[in-house]
Image (cartoon, rainbow over all chains, first blue to last red; front, side, top):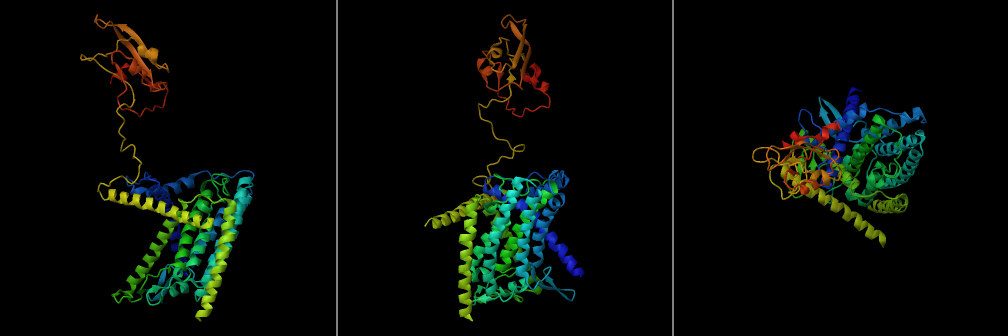
Length: 356
Length: 156
């Protein structure tokens, strides 16, 4: 019980810290792309550290801003929706395995908050529930533009939920279990003796569909119709202060969660190629014996590096593409991704049935 | 098919952005380790610490020049007052004991709150008494009256 509590606290702290870091990464990466420098003035005792304290300054500012509620809103729902949208995303972290089970003080501890039997559907379900936060905020704001944003968000998320589901059904066919830890363990095997059995190798098309659909789920720039900063202010038009900050934070949490999911499903989770519990065993015949603890450290580190790369890649995408038009968005979802998902599912099913 | 062209452009786009990120990041890293990169990673100039060099003919805050004996060169001919399009220069003349000079400014003030930094006063001056080459470009005050620069301020 205590262990579970500690795990929850640690995982949440990890997620929130990473989300704060993401705001910094977003600012800096976009700055470097655009020949700028980016926020670098926030300092503690003259220490600047490339503006690494800027997220803290932003957070402090956000906390002390006035939390203004317009008189025409539904007060309870208005206050509820940011928490709802935050919760539904943050709870997903419970299903992500950070590393292999560790023996600590005579106990096996899984580096995962909850190793659910149905980890994959749980993640999907929670990501879908995130819609409620958006629709509710749009509705409770009692503002035309917020409502427009909320409706757009609902339409977009529902559409891409289908594609997301289809891309993962292919995985379900390939993987032996819906349990996240089992999925990652399975990806530690080798294909043809040298290729790591990662999801990207088994389901390349599935990965592309998953990634595009997941990007749409994050509601960030190429797919930011619910927000649409330049046309409608979006579903959080009537929010200020910390509640608005919570929506912003949710965006970054989603980026991290999508990175986590992409890594867990398609890039081997905490698996390092050719690293077994005893150490590295390379297919070309070399061997590098490592202690058990060191192997775990390697694997956890690998998980973080993969997540970092994916987060960076998502920021890159966000600063490259312009926003899709509404009909283009729907076309991409219903006419491209879902047929591709069908195709992928069909191909996977055929191959799997022929293989067995 | 149009979709293929679209796909190609999508991929090209992200490659271009990634390239510019990597190149800039490379130059940033090189500069961080104290080496001199071929060009800086960003075009930004970190203003209060580093300054851009002003152009040779940049018109900054005015100054009044002096003679060898330290008196202002100005002979209070009022040409600058006449030419000034924003009417921000005020000169009150007084008699100079030197018969060669005859007139000197008793008061000379420029209201920098009105000045449009056109430089006409500098061109009009027959005595080369006023110049705009101080390089002072940070002119901010909290009160309007503080923009009134007098003879002593301008001679400094």
